[in-house]
Length: 267
Ligand code: HEM
Image 1 (cartoon, rainbow, N blue to C red):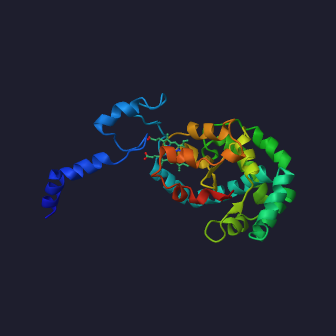
Image 2: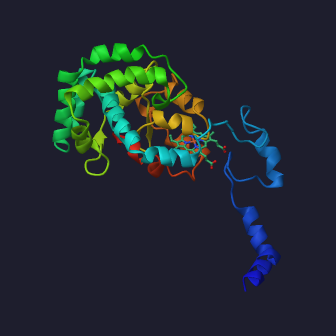
Image 3: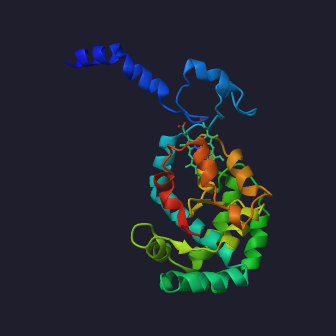
């Protein structure tokens, strides 16, 4: 029965024609049909002979590794903490965006907002923190995997941990019970994009803000394309959403699932 179906499928010329007629987008990850290859090879000067921007990922940095990495308890704790630190740096270092944030979120997330205020006032001197973080050179790698950066960040984590139980932070901000889902002003997001020495990047995709740094080294299209996009001098408050660029390269990628634990909120 199965063999018969396969035979019919192979002999069926309308099936063959219909697959040939499927519209392919530029840079599609499926193999191009023979007549298409000459078109795609000239589509981008930086792309390879088949029109794709291939990069070599580090060992253990494939898509499956990303899923395993995200699933680790230690990653979840660190990501939660980094999301909080990134909000403090991008939002609380500026009075206007801080007040806007409080106004936008206090009714929806009163405990979380209060805790962030406490952190910004009691645990950190935000200006000092920014100076400290600015000492890190921009690295093409994630904070999670670089010892030098880790040392500094371990200091910052240690400072928080000396004052607050990690469980309290996790209870307040963990994805399951109490997701981090703040409304954040576009100006504050742009501020995050423009902090050149800070390796704590957000990226807005379809209105959702993600803490994207840990994904850099797992991105099959490479990290430099992402960093370039975020650091572009052409970015303005109206151009912080990178969904169009995202869709241009891979409309089949489900970013909401891949980046779910890295969601910070929405603009
Ligand atoms: C931040 C969210 C993003 C996620 C989760 C993501 C995910 C992925 C995945 C899973 C692939 C492999 C796709 C495949 O081989 O079928 C990929 C490839 C790629 N991505 Fe992204 N990406 C993101 C953002 C972006 C952005 C903003 C750009 C460009 C502006 C970009 C450019 C590329 C390129 C050039 C490739 C290689 C395409 C190819 O080999 O055909 N990505 N990305």
